[in-house]
Amino acid sequence: MTISDEQLQSLFEKALEASKHAYIPYSHFPVGAALLTENGKIITGANIENRSFGLTNCAERSAIFTAASQGVRTFIAIAVATPASDYPVGPCGACRQVLSEFAPGETPVVFGPDWKHCVKTTLGVLYPYDSLHELASNGSGR
Image (cartoon, rainbow, N blue to C red):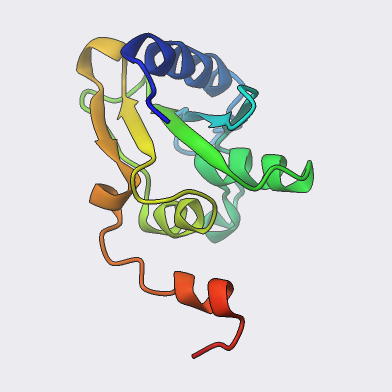
């Protein structure tokens, strides 16, 4: 499925809106994510911090976990907004791993502080060596 620039920009605007709901008393660095599902639904998430920083949840994983808990298992695009940054900040390694669980390598990914400065790429470029999908596809674990 081809995603237009207009659709990606709209998705990015939803991510920017989601960043306003970030719980960031420690870093003061809001992040919002928006996932586009196969049926056109948009599911958003924001980063949620914790005093024990390892328990913090990124915006991307917040959105994915929300979607998965609603039965949504496939995404066709993702946008990540970091409005407080001076440059585009992409998904962290943990988020890239989780994204790869639910989206193929050709899935469009856009990220940045605003639309003008967004990086447009794919999940496969961000996470090129996703080697474990065969575990889920054949069920054998080998």
